Length: 223
Image 1 (cartoon, rainbow, N blue to C red):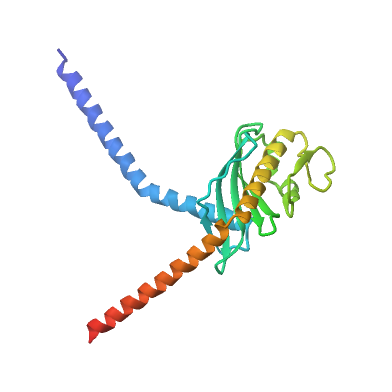
Image 2 (cartoon, rainbow, N blue to C red; image 1 turned 30 degrees about the vertical axis):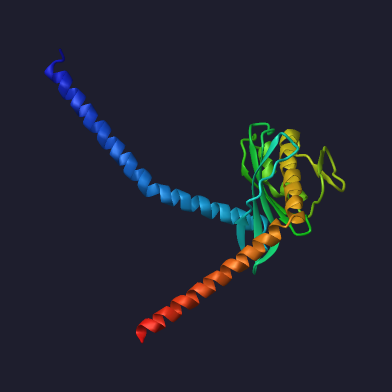
């Protein structure tokens, strides 16, 4: 049999645990929308950062697979300006980083040239692989086309100069860019981009027609 003191302690622990659970649930309810909003804002800023000519983005419904087993194409966003496609923002993850996965967002224009890249996630060594996020390395990709390779020392056309003592990281990032260029090329060749434009225009027409009908109904009720 449990003594009275043991039962009291158990009840107190139960009450404390229940209150703590309720507090955590409340905090989660309050912070979850804020976290989601901040995450969406960060995503939008990253998209506009790599493809500044685009005013809005639509995620492509097409799925892509890379021939490089070390990378995964996470998403492809089509960039629009005044309902016209101006390029693509492709997010790719490489599992071949020195410290783990490296996630990169790549901006690509309609000429299939890289506009900019952004390192979204990385666990690379500070002062070495982590330098992949610095302009000295990132800026090499601007305007790049085709299949890029990594070299030690001075890079020539179609090559990327590796970060000193961080060749593995350099190759991981470059493989992400290569995969992004291929995905954008496939999308550009297909009718997906054009279909997205037509869908956008059609939705706008439907919206305008709906608003017109609602306006007519409101006027009829006023009479």
